[in-house]
Image (cartoon, rainbow, N blue to C red; front, side):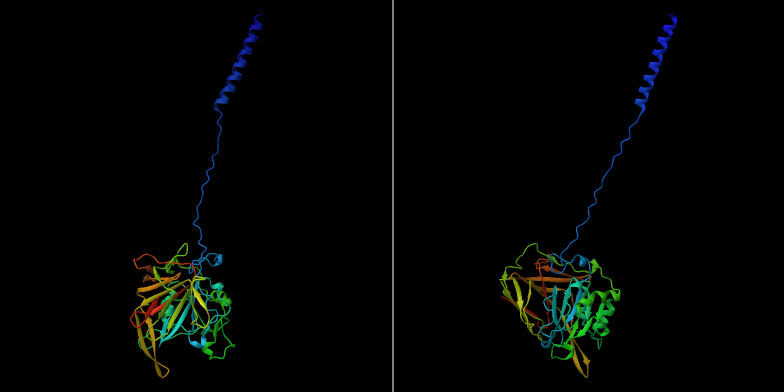
Length: 352
């Protein structure tokens, strides 16, 4: 009997010991939970619009790349200029002796047509204007400093402007043979050769945002002002002709046939600036160059059949267009014409 009691007691003790250990193990077992935290990274969307026109569907490969600025002749034998109307912006003004010249700006240098021109030589005002947009400057020749005048070549050198010059030869430039005019009216640029020429020079292709003048655009078509402007005319100086534009309501653009072909713009802008004439010896005679001060002043803006007075300024090398009350000027999306008119030498604007 005594043995049976001892056996039962031992069995009870063993059970208590077993379940006590199991409970202790259960209480001391720790379950580790891993928490994963996901951090969302927000990147600023890339603006896919053309920075010179505000137009969408811009070449993605050209986003953030430098534009090019081409010097194009404007004398009667050169008209119509090859590929005129294809650039994003045309700048036009007097350069010397009553002669006007043009600067064509393309935001995407891979989109320049295969045949552009006639190409002409560098003058300081156009070298300087190209710098407002951090552009690579393309020209054929240039003026030299003489008797108090600073030449186009010297401006390029002093300002450290990246340029492509037809005087250097190579495949980028050539002569057209289809027109019976003198050779200076037949110099062409082969646009499809520009990327290779830039690469061969080792020029920077990314825009320096601190050196690029930002243009502002309306989200939708907007009147320039309250004054009607179906006819708009710009006279560069008392020595030059007048560039006339006619607004056509069917396409909402300003048209001109002054270059012996129809060319149209969404925006027409005129900047009035103080200018200086400098007469220097030239080939046994004299020539008179015109310099722009680019210090700012008044101007006019026409779009959508209306016009308004504006102001403009240059600060830290950047061009700024403003409304008459000092706000950034909002342009309509599309191509622009910019006329440079002499505020103190007979430049003028008229519209109705």
